[in-house]
Structures are given as C-alpha cells and as structure tokens.
Length: 220
Length: 231
Image (cartoon, rainbow over all chains, first blue to last red; front, side, top):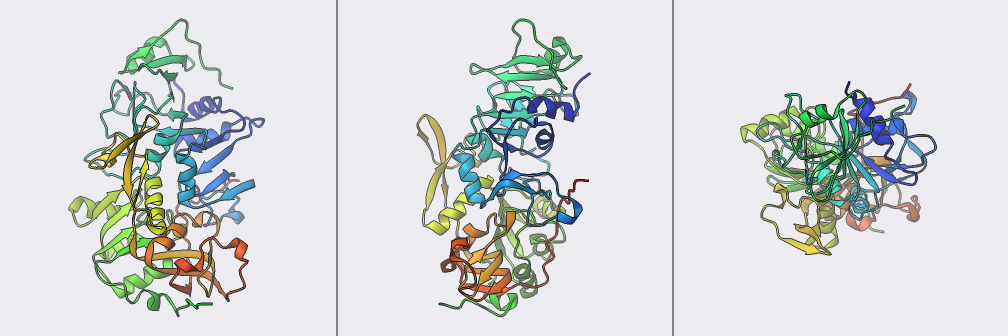
C-alpha cells in the first residue's frame, strides 16, 4: 500500500518546525499546509509577493488582487505582509526562507533536480523554481517514486533538463522517505506503511543506501 | 507639482510604434494593465517584444495580443496557461526567452536602478547558464545576468495621484514597481486617480519620478484564473 498525495503531504508536514518561513510549490506541496499541527507556528511565503498565506477565502471574500503563486485566490492572516516580486526573490535568494518544498520529475543521487521542461513537449517555463532551488538551504521534494510510465524518478543522474544542482536534501514519495547524502546516494529513512524495502529497491534506479532496520512512517 | 495625467489609454499609448520593447506588469492576470492592452489592440502595432512574467490566457491579458499576432517575442518566466501561445511557439511565429522568475524580477529592477549586471545562483548548471559568465563567491557558483529595460512600461496600480505616485493593492503589486522604473516611458493606469496631496507620502510604493503618464482606468474586469474558496 503506497501513500496517496495526502499521505505524502502529511509525512512532509512532520518535517516542519516552529518559527520557519516556508515556500510551498504547486501540487502536493500546497497540500502540506493543511497538515501542519496547530502548535507549530510557521509563515508561508508566496513568491508573487505575500508572507503569511491564509486559507482559501469564503465566496464573499474572494479578491482578484490576492492570489498565491498557483494563481489561486487566498486570504491574509494577522501579521501578513505584501511586497514586490523583486523583494520576494530577494528574500528567497538571500536565504531568509527556511524551507522550500516542491515537486519534481526527476531527482538524482547527487541532489540534482529536474522539474521544468520536457524537450519536444510544451515548455511552460521554470517560474520561480530555479531561484528557489539555487538559494534554499533546506529543500524537500514531494513526488511519486515512479513515473506514470513506470520509470524510476530517483536516478543516478537526471535525464531531463536540470533545474538545479546538488540542492535537494530529502525526498518524500508514495513509497519512502529518503535523504540525499553528501557523498551521493538516497539513504532510506522510512518506508510507507505496507511497503517493503525490496519494493523501494525495485523502484529506485539511483544508488539506494540501506543501513540497519528501516522504520515505517508514523502517520496520524 | 508636475502633472502627469493623460485623458485615457488611447492617448497614453498613441506613440508606441511597431517593434517596440514593452514591459507589462502583472502576475498571472493579477495587476495587469487591462486598459493599456485594450488600447494596444486598437492601435494595432506589431512586432512587439513583451517582457512580462506570464503571457495571459487565450482570451485575456497578453493572450489577446498574441491572438492578433502583435507580439514577436515574449520574455517571461512561465507561460503555461495559453494554448495560442503554444501553437505560435511550435509553429515558429513567436520567439520566447524563458527566464527564472527571480532573475527576471531582478533584471528589471537592475534596469531601473542603473545596474548593468549582477551575479545570481539561479540557473547555474542549467541551460539558462549557457553562454553566460560564471564566477565563484565564497565557494558557490553564480552566473552573470544583465539588466532589462524597455521603450515603454505599462503598469497598473490601485491608486495614483496626478503627480504619478502609485499605491498597489495585495499581490497585484508583483512586477509593477520595478517595471515602472525600467521603462523609458512609463504609462500607469489606476483604479482611482486622485489629486496630488490626497495620498499619504508614507504609503507611496512607486514615486512619481518613474511615471511619465497616468490615467484613470475604466471597466476593470480583474479576471480570476483559479477561483478557490473555502466552505
């Protein structure tokens, strides 16, 4: 039994510590916000110029001048602040954002990430992804372990155009939690409920490091 | 105080000619210069290079100017919401230069601030770095990016005064302030135009020195791309 998207989001939420400023990418990362425990105080950053993203608005409070990076209507919280795109990426590039969570098409055992382009298909652009991965100290990738066509997305080297080099620290997939070690390799930290180490080995094309007993994720 | 007011969008954009380079403010459809875009459609200028974070959607924003084939080249960070854009790109009718969003914002800021180049880590080791100088600072690699400037910048603000001072609202600020500074001629449209002195100087986001023309905008649609609500 592998995790669904909500399971991945719930597991990533456990990585979050109080006092952090966090940038959440589009897709599964956005869901993480729903599972941050109430006693953890964090501020979510939206790269289009908002610190302190609130919940989606009630119908009567929808404001076209207040959207997140996914162009969804949002609200502000007590203590929110607004700024320009240059200021926003200044705080990203300047290392003021503590954690970046984003999706990926491929991650390499060196921590390289590819998530912006598939040659020959539509090129949508990298948006803020290259700035985020080049600047953040702590980057967690949320993604499926294998692609829809069944290929492993955890590789020895990325095959798709690179978004950033040596930047991913941790990967949370539907099968496992893995840490990228400095010498290169995916160190298996936890298995998803009901998923065996052998299943994960079979789904991982890059170097998988297995040390001792691997605990199962604890999800509530 | 210098009075920057012009009658309307048609008057404001009338000297924009074929093959100009334009900056257009906005993130998605939020904070885009709706009135100036409508006036450009009417003016019919062609061969434009448009610097804008996004390219609108098929039937709104810059997407309208793509449909009329007025745009020769887009300089953007993300263009994924527009099928006509994709068609023109694949058929070779349209050129596109994709730039990391933070580098785009900073290149525009640098243009307005008189900084011809700066080093950024964004794009190191990627195809964005091809042909660009790289340099190591404190053990980390950075690449040299250059400023961006435009013949005309088209920005949209919430409030503005006759002296060209601007205040933005919410996340509609985005690229507008930097673009205001990076245009040789900056045209600002506002939802509410007030006399000089009516805005608190402490609250001004963009000082009037950057704005050459300002007009009271009309009929704002402010379309929402992803209307998401909670129950």
